[in-house]
Length: 102
Image (cartoon, rainbow, N blue to C red; front, side, top):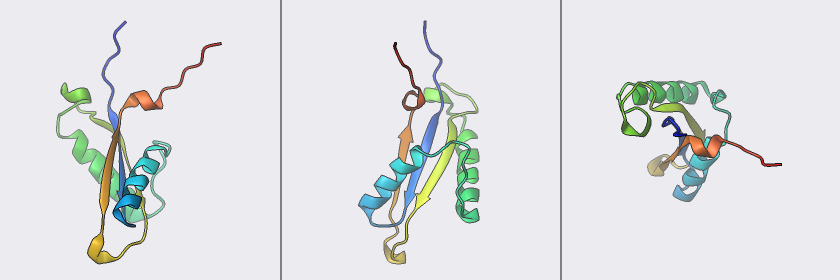
């Protein structure tokens, strides 16, 4: 049985130092896909980025289509404005599946 390719999830970390922004991007991937950022600015940015990603026509695994990503999730931390680090992490659907054998 072959599986159909699935869209991915984009985690974005903004702020802190670069190491923290990388950790934040991974933390973002663990958030519920339907949970928007509590800050209105970042919630709108998540929505805008998702729309723009899905209008590229890339689709799952680059095979074309209108659903390249399921969600864009952003986590932030304070930092000095002169050194605003940003990290982006891509997660495929296989990390969001769970099975158990009894």
